[in-house]
Amino acid sequence: MSKPLEKIRVLDWTAWQQGPIATALLADMGAEVIKIEPPEGEPGRGMLRMYGRDLPLNFYYQNQNRGKKGIVLDLRKPKAREILYKLVEKSDVFVTNYRESISKRLKLDYETLKKHNPLLIYAYSSGYGPKGPDADKVAADFSGQARGGLWSVTQSEDLVPTPIGAGFGDEVGGLMTAYGILLAIISREQFGIGQRVDASLLGSQIEMGRLLLHAYLVMGVIPPGSLIKGARNPLYNIYQDCDGKWFAIAALQADRYWPQFCNVLGIEEMEKDPRFENQLARGDNFEEIMPRMKEIIRTRSRNEWLRLLDEAGLPVAPVNDYSDVSQDPQVIENEYIVEIEDPVHGKLKLPGVTVKLSETPGKVERLGPELGQHTEEILMELCGYSWDDLAKLREEGIY
Image 1 (spheres, rainbow, N blue to C red):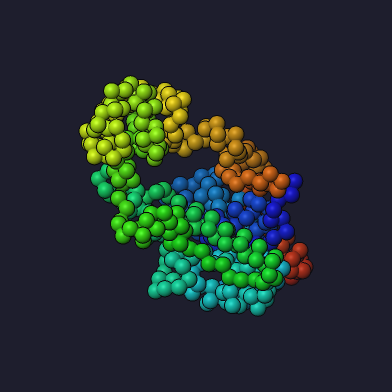
Image 2 (image 1 turned 135 degrees about the vertical axis):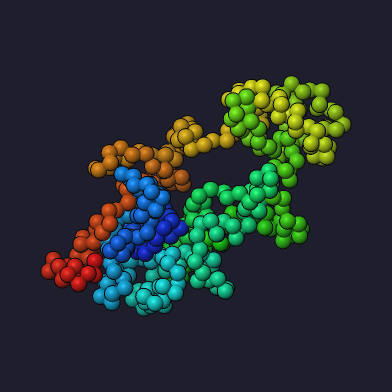
C-alpha cells in the first residue's frame, strides 16, 4: 500500500531530538529521509553514555531516527559540502536544527542552498524563533518548556513549577516543524515555489498553551498555577483510590453530572444541599467538600470507581504510567504501539504512527541507521560517484 510522502526526498542535517523528530514523522509517512552525520556521529548517539548507561539499543537515538537512511559527511570540508549541494539538487526538503550561525558559517543556510535548488523547502527548527535578540541562542527542551509559559500552570500543590516531561518540548517542536514542511509541500504543488519554513521550540510551547495565553490576552488575568486549584471543581479533579492509584474525573460541565456523581458516591443528601447544589456554591465551599470526596474515593479501587462513574456517564480516565500505557487495550488496538522485526535485535516494540490515513497509511518499518550505513549507496546512486571516487573521498576524510 502506498504512503503519502513516497516521492519526497528529505535531507536531514539535525541533532538531538527536536529536528530529528520532524524528519522521523516524515519517514513514517513514506518520505526518503537521508540523515547526514559527522564522522563521529550526531550527539544523540552518545546520549545514554553521558549518564553512564550503554544499552544494546539506544532508545533515545532510535526514537527520533527510525526509518531513515544514514550517511556520513564532514561538512567542515569544502568537498563534503559540494557533495551535499549535489544532494540538494535532487531533494525536496532540507531540515536542520543547528543554530543559524553554524549554518551560515558552513554555507548551509537557505540563501546558499536555494541557489542549487530554487524549489527547495528549507526547514529551520530553532530554539526561540528566527528573529529577536535570542534568535541564535542555545536552547534545549527544558529551557523551551520553561520559557513558553506552560510550567506556570503545571505547578505542584506547593506551587513549584513542574516540568511536563522529558522531551515534551522537543517532541512538539518537531511536530510543528513537520506540520510546516507539509504546508510548504502543498504550497509548492499549488504555486510552484520553494520556501523557508521556520518552527521553534518556543513557538511550539506557545501553540500548546494557546488557550491559556489567549485567556490572558483577553482578560488580563494570569491563569492559576494549579489547574485543579483554580477550577475548584470536585468533578474536574484527580483522586487516589484505596491502593494508592490515581484517576481523573474530567467533567467541566459539573452541574450536568452532579446528580449522577452524588448517586455513585452515595451522597444523595448533598445533591440539593445549598452549599453544594451548583458549581458556584461548590467552588465557594471547596475546602469543605473535598476532604469528604477524597475520603469516600479511598474506600474502593480505581477500577471499581472507573466502572461506576463510566456507567453513570461521567468522563473519567486512569492516570497511567508508561507500563499501564503499554498494556492499554485502546493503545494496542489502535496500533499506537507496534512490533517490528529487526535483523540484529529481533522483535522490538516501538511507538507507532498515531495519525491514521485509510488509503495511504504511514507505518514504522525499521530502526534508525547505523552510523554512515548508506553513505556509499547514496553517493553512487544520487551523485554518480564510482568506487574509485569513493576511495579517494574516504582517503581525504570526506566521509
